[in-house]
Amino acid sequence: MMINQNKIPQATAKRLPLYYRFLNNLHIQGKSRVSSKELSEAMKVDSATIRRDFSYFGALGKKGYGYNVEYLLGFFRKTLDQDENTPVALIGVGNLGTAFLNYNFTKNNNTKIEVAFDADKRKVGKTIGDIQVHHIDDLEGNLENISVAILTVPVSEAQNITDRLVKAGISGILNFTPARITVPENVRVHHIDLAVELQSLAYFMKHYPLENEGEE
Amino acid sequence: MMINQNKIPQATAKRLPLYYRFLNNLHIQGKSRVSSKELSEAMKVDSATIRRDFSYFGALGKKGYGYNVEYLLGFFRKTLDQDENTPVALIGVGNLGTAFLNYNFTKNNNTKIEVAFDADKRKVGKTIGDIQVHHIDDLEGNLENISVAILTVPVSEAQNITDRLVKAGISGILNFTPARITVPENVRVHHIDLAVELQSLAYFMKHYPLENEGEE
DNA sequence: AAAAGTAAGTAAAAACATTCACAAATCCAA
DNA sequence: TTGGATTTGTGAATGTTTTTACTTACTTTT
Image (cartoon, rainbow over all chains, first blue to last red; front, top):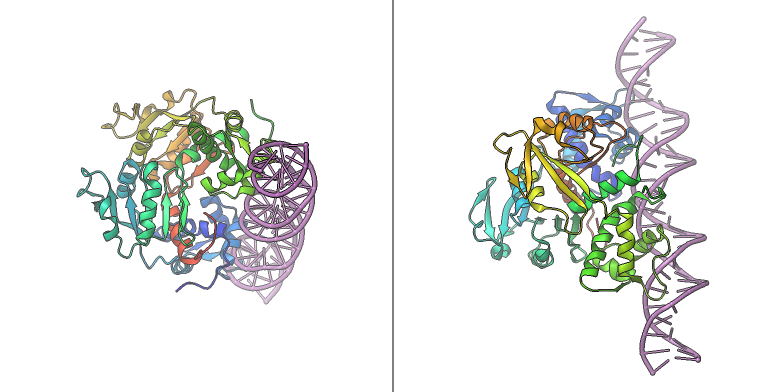
């Protein structure tokens, strides 16, 4: 495992799951061939960027023809480890947490919430979207083989729970709380701050009047 | 209005709401002075980046001292138009939409969901988090003064509803569906793709083993 | 089989963003 | 009041990402 290349730019890496999903859709639709231009229109990513991104993995297409959907899809499946599943723990079964449980990833997706926790005893024992809710006190015993957590707890609990997650061996956290949590160097945190996103959109609308630009 | 500077880098603009929120917290806590180093530790943004970001707005601090929290906060309040409220429409009162309605922004926040829509008649008429749910058919009549929409509908409806939103005068969309929607040039779309975020985190964990890096 | 068209791949340029490193200004302790 | 400590603001260096522009190779049509 551990594919050699650490050379793929982060910006590219962030787009890979998007590429994968679109290729999968095309494949399901029975399309066997696609060009960077078509992909560009569908995904709103510049076609040169797409070609450059793909090129980090080698020459995957054919000049004058484009890309073979099935081949490309297979390639990305391996690259993105779509074979192996990534089990995920959800911490905090509030409104947002419940949304995640019902959302049920794994349509074209190798990530799946396997276990959920909440501090509210009325929620413990319930099954939401097929997933059992455990009490947060039982966190430590129920994270076997799980290294990724989605954090949807109240902001006041965020750091405290994070510390426990880290101690329990979690090494990646998708943090939906507004808290900028502190973790050891070997733990990766991605923040998604919904209030910031909304304000940021409003700011861009007011101060960056577009009449031409591409995207986000 | 329309503050002169179109010169602020986008990367900086995206951090402004974060800065604002932290300054507000500091102010509430009664702190009157703060350095870029302290801010850096709290927000996990490099201190030089913070100083550089602030500097786009002029010299806001004092050498040897740091920044006056109240002054800086006041400055950002004006810059971010925290005075004027930005009313928002929520389209799609499913799990995620409900989470937003209950989440209720506007703690330190000038964005507020004012109206919600759904296609399910059983939801219409309900009040969730103080917000009335209207039928999606009544979209066009109920978007007076609203220019921002949060899109949390099923992916199959995304483009169709987007077209209606645009026709009804919406010029900014926070899109939580996996669809990469098509809009006219003058409409700004920010995508938040939860499945992609999760997969992307998993990819980074596997291929970018950190033992040192900063953040996202 | 030739000509016209298409589209990948990429080198180089441009644009964008972060970080270093330090002078200048101010603070603060004794 | 002096002198060391602090901390900003920023030029320059570095790093990253996007975009341009073009060659090459293949496809398709005639």
